[in-house]
Length: 97
Image: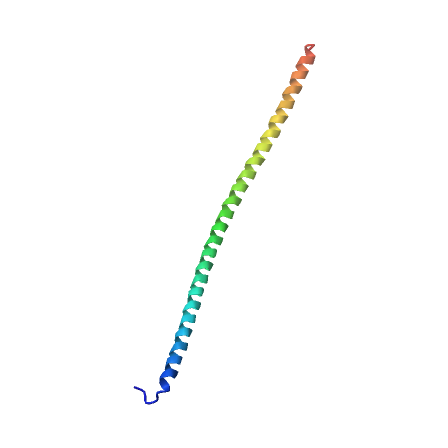
């Protein structure tokens, strides 16, 4: 036992302050771990979004290339139709049609 009876309340008060400080520290550490986990999740999501963007850009490039090929084919078909119609008109005019 302590020779100074006033020392026990002082020690108890110090232990209580130490306990509160440790509790605050534990809470701060927990908040930090939660924040780090959230940051990790956000980084993972950002990486997935980047990958999705790359895939979408590739798909868009392919679709644009296909659209260009279709436009060119459409122009060629149109040109051939005009040519065929002119040939038919020429034949009809030559034969009195």
